[in-house]
Image (cartoon, rainbow, N blue to C red; front, side):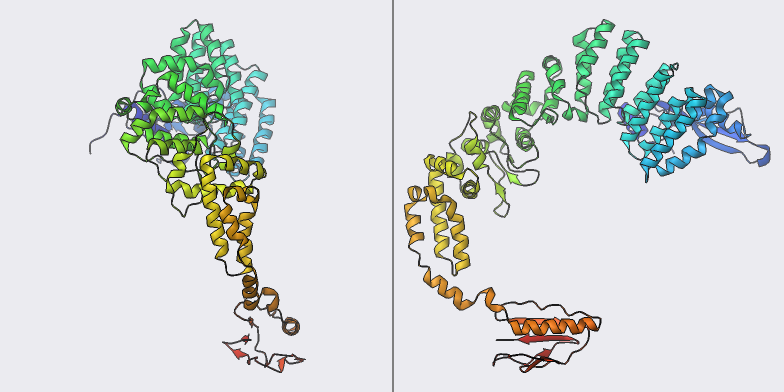
Length: 632
């Protein structure tokens, strides 16, 4: 079998992150460590050796821990592979750096293991237990506290509890400051990277670390460590924090470095992270000029900006338009409006517009009018028509809906659209559209002219009638040249439905739909009003009375008999449920726990006489214990 002896950097990093053991010499990455084979012997084991696979960094600690148990290591230590480098934890660090007091650390091992088992099911109890052990350890050997708290944090990381992990990591750093402990820079750098990559490095801890770095290290080294930590933290899924630009500029200035070059390199690395989509507004505002310059030097940045939907900016229309302005300044907009540039950078304008329309809803069913979005889509119309790929403006988080102005613009420009079917409940925000006084309101001619959207306008008009300020909105609709015709058509259809009902309940439902439109109905659709007024109500009343109403289906004598049956069944341990009534005619059925003697028409049960109608038919048994009474 041929061994694989080399990997590219990306593959090696992915395998190490997944916990793989690579062949020896596979990578020269800084975060890779040799996996050693360590053999131990003990007099009580005769010739049976104990073999341990231990990362090289932790080898010395492993030797000391097993020496405490009386095991001796053989001199030869071959390397079996490569794994991700681990920092010395607890109790390994204590055994290596202070073996004279190592017994304090070993005395806590069993308690740590017990709390580790509780961390998943009872995290609160485990947290309290680790804190109590920390107080005990701090009284005897306070210089063990940082590694102890880090180990507690790792326990919670194993169960994906980053909140408690971050809290104990903060306690470790606090112990260093409170007890004025010396800091091993290389070890602390590795620990910070470990927790940054795990997503357990809080903004507070990072800002405190910035101050500590500036105090302990020379400015250039402090900036290098901070930059690496920031990038690793974002790679782990944590977005850049709000004051990152100010902290970075302070360290760059102290180091005397070229600010433009350093900020460009930092921003490029952060943009590549998936967490960039949640970067706060302060990040984009502070680095707005840097992004423009970076996009000039690295055109791929423009395509990356189009992939990002900035969830951390805010939910207002002004925040969305800020992002569009940033895209224009960086030259990313040209990839949406120029078909040749879009093809060169593998950008799909239809896909971007679909994602942008969904993003602007911010978790709702529709978005508010955005003049900047309308202007951009007008410039994108040519490439979108030529591409012929449908744009989805309707998909929402919970319900389908669309921005009316954007929908009208796309329909007017002939942009292909993916339209939900008639079975999908789709909402057009006509009430909000009528109240919105921003610039860019469309005339809705194109929407009204398309049969697919005209039916949606009909549904939207009903929502206008249900609005609290419907009277004013309806007058606005009546004065709108396009919506007036749509309303006239809808009122005619609703009047036709009213004339087609066969009973009073249907008539009431039809009139309830029409009632909100009384202020403008006579002005907009006098023919529909005449149709409704001319509808004869007496035939509807007669048909309803002949068919019967629910109140007529009651029969007091039977209700009394059923109450007695219930009481009798209850005494025997089984309760007879009340029978339901259905149409046509009263029909009752019930099931009893035991077979009962029951006859009709004279007696409904063993001790009650009922005044039954003459057309009552005798009850019949349908299966064991099931009785049915019918009255036709």
